[in-house]
Image (cartoon, rainbow, N blue to C red; front, top):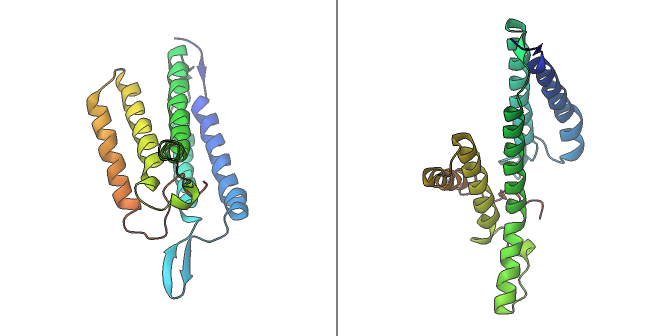
Length: 188
C-alpha cells in the first residue's frame, strides 16, 4: 500500500473557508439586493438568492468531506490519471463558459457582417433567440463534454441528453420569470 494523505480533510476545510468568504464577504459586498425583494407589492427573487443557495451547498459538501474524513483518515494520494481527469474537467468547464459568454455577441457580429446591420447584443440580450444562444451552446457543450469525459468516448446520447437538459433549464428558469436574464446576459 502506498503513502496515505488527508486530502479530503484539506479539501473540505478549503471549501468551508471559501463558502464562508462567499457568505460573509463576497455576497454582501457585491450584490445590491437581498434574497427576496418586495417591489410594488410584488415578491421577486433577489440577486443574492442564487449565490447564497450555492454557498450553502458548498457548506454541505465541505462539511460532508470533513465528517467522512474522520471515519476514514487514510486516503490514497491522487494518481496522475486522477489529476489529468480533473484538469480536463476544468478545461471543459472553462471552454464552455467562454463559449457561453461570447457566442451571443459573436452571433450578432456575424449577422451584422452578413446583413450590414447595426444590431447591439446588449440591447438584444433579453429577446429570443439572442438570449438563448450563449446559454444553449455553452450549456450543451459543458454538459455533453462532462458526460463524454466521464464515459471516455464521444456519444450522440450525451449530446442529446445535454440538449434536453439545457432546454429543460431554459423552460424552468427563463419562461416563468419576466425579469430574469439567463447567464451570461446579466454581465454583457
